Amino acid sequence: MNKPVGKMEITRAEPIPAAEIEAKAIELFTGRDSSLAVRNLVDLRQVAEILCRGGLAAGKTVEKVMCAIMVGHELGIGPANSVQQLYVTPQGKVEAEVGMLLALAQRSPAWRGYSLAWEGKLEDRTLKCTATIRREGCPDVVSDMDLQRAAAWSWLTPKKSADGRDQNIWNKDPRLMLENRAISWGIKKQFSDCVTGIFGKGEISGEVDANA
Image 1 (spheres, helix red, strand yellow):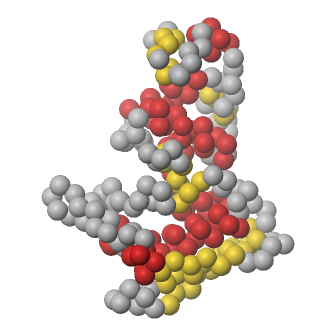
Image 2: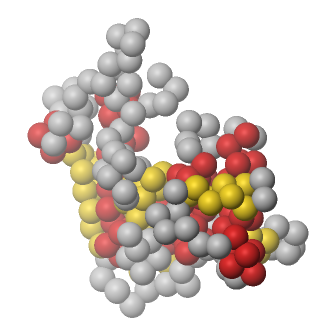
Image 3: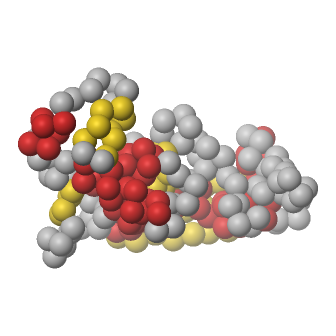
């Protein structure tokens, strides 16, 4: 049900009086220089609408942008980065670009780097990427991904666009995708306290190249 708040509308399962929303200042986030502060749900919707109109949230609904901003706040990420790096899937999960997962892990004082190792060949689908994620005071976490498993899990299935082009980025850049999946799985194991509840991009929703 939509409850009017001035010129704004907030979608809620259980409507809350506008005066209560205005009065209840939920300090969601404050900019580094205190110039941008989201104090309540009205502010949150206004920020989300600006990001949508400005093109930073192309193809996303205002409500999904609001959710991304709130999840980003829990992770210590600003609204603009949250909208570009976090994705709310149709299954109700949150995915993040592998670069964002790395950045979150690297914030930890215990971060001690990572390394990659490759074996096999792309031509016969034996290519495999192994990521080693290091954390002070903990055993190294070794995580790997290979094309044979990707094929078995249907990750290499073509996803055709209207003009017949394959939009599945696994088929366009398999080395990148193997690296991304190995890193994201390793980070989720080694730094679960930093990325709780966040999946690597495509883990839930499937990989599609938006630029295809």
